[in-house]
Length: 256
Length: 227
Ligand code: HEM
Ligand code: SF4
Ligand code: FES
Image 1 (cartoon, rainbow over the protein chains, first blue to last red):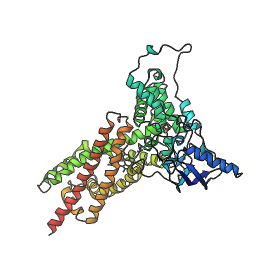
Image 2 (image 1 turned 180 degrees about the horizontal axis):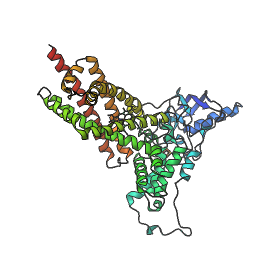
Image 3 (image 1 turned 90 degrees about the vertical axis):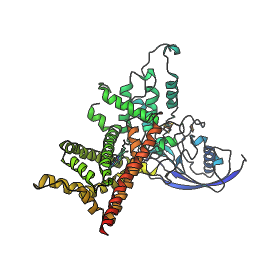
Image 4 (image 1 turned 60 degrees about the vertical axis):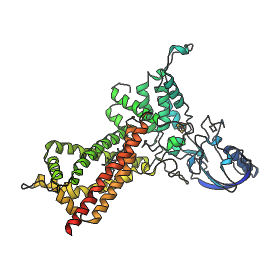
């Protein structure tokens, strides 16, 4: 594709901290290359702001290759922008034309309070994982991988669920701000493996309980999460979480 | 966690909505089957007999209590969930995704359900109310001739239109609801989810279409007779 440069208008959410009210501010950037990533465009904008003696825009990022899940930007009504199964760092400026206006907002959910500008607090996810996303293993040397035979299909499904990067786009996209896709991915990748079996009953109920305590909405099977997930986590995982939960409910086990 | 805890989480509440929703779907099938007898070309004899059987049968009256309970639980629980979910994002987005990533009717179950509820009140007032009131409070009661009731009620064009709107709301509610309840029970696995979607869609269109044809048919009959 032909390389080109563009001038853009950006409307970006600015908010000092979680207490103060935020508002949109308008910025102009010029000579943005179509080869740049969306975050590189933000770097240019921030350099420009620093040069002008203004405060740069705070945004989360780390790996810049689609694996860490930090780059939470809600771009023109879509988490991570319009591209299918990509994060913001993987979105490239060839998506845009000269003269475009782009609106950038933080993830919005009461369970993800804004820390500053586009940065939100996603530690609610960590607490959900701490409530059940672990397994018991023997200490000492790792045992031989072949002593636990695992069905190839299950291993693949587990791996697909484990590819969730905890970015929170599912929550950002959901009209109910529900975290079910995330929780279902975290329950699924362990529920499918023999290693996850000992805590299986407790895991589903404890993680769901924590998800409710954190104030996420309930799942009404709308499906916007699956459509926006950068890792293609499937709604089939939510079906599995529901099965795990119903299983725990009827098992009558004390811990569950 | 005990039973109460299990039914109090967000998934637990959803299981109640799904289970009662499925029960209501079964009710719709029975209701539609009995009502479809109005199309029998015998001036409503088949239909009146079937309706009299349903009305006079003690077992049906007992199941009806369950039906009211199911409606009650479904409505209260789902509207509570919907209102709680609406509070999870106090500061909304300036640019909304709209229909790009989801269907509008899947996001509007509370509204569609409320429209069904309004229709339901009118519907009970037309048929169920007067008849059952007589059964319990009037010693000289005889099962109403529901066929004649229908002819009389659906003579009014506005009633027919309201009933059609009720059927449209039901159609949209079920377009999301049937498949959604299967997902709630964890049945929408890789192998079945496609089938569940198609069967749900066919059901959501077929049953309301059958229901919608009844007031239209009765309206035509009663206006024909008037001439
Ligand atoms: C014959 C009438 C009705 C039938 C057959 C029916 C059926 C269903 C079904 C199958 C679901 C999906 C449940 C799930 O996802 O697990 C559902 C959801 C829902 N129903 Fe109904 N329903 C009826 C009437 C009503 C009424 C009268 C209301 C409210 C006034 C209502 C409100 C809702 C709401 C808000 C949901 C979404 C809940 C959620 O997804 O969390 N429904 N319904
Ligand atoms: S399920 Fe997808 S959208 Fe949700 S946190 Fe995991 S990777 Fe992000
Ligand atoms: S910065 Fe790591 S996924 Fe985007």
